[in-house]
Image 1: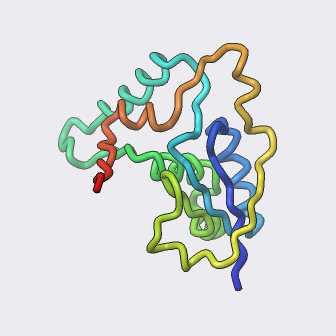
Image 2: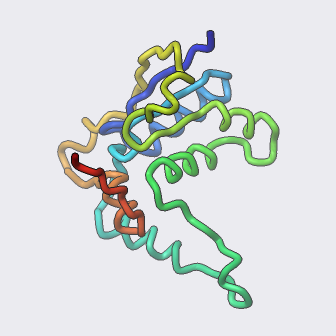
Image 3: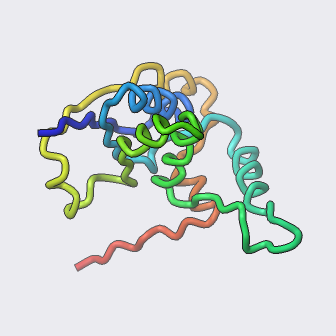
Length: 157
């Protein structure tokens, strides 16, 4: 039975959290991250929004449909951050990225049977405590909705 480390991204600083995840993945640990939308990015809200909106306006002059393309969903956004922290052109970086599974809120029902043995784990040095004095941060959910993520509407029955 394969063992997965369960990490909760709620109130974790995105960069610090993803660097720890990348390091663990390089060591061969299998990781499942839940609540990706609740991770936080430190800084002024307006500056963060302007930075990522400026990235979306970059395109080629000859054919704008060629990209670059930027993720807008919180789980793919976080996956991209982890990917940039791994060795890019080496096989070990690609294999490490395959060991990391990221979900927006909780593990969907259709994937629950994949993770038979989940071990809750904690990432050090990634808490929000450092930012509580300044209160200058935004959630990944806030940023992704600003740059164009259409949240799925839950049906009420």
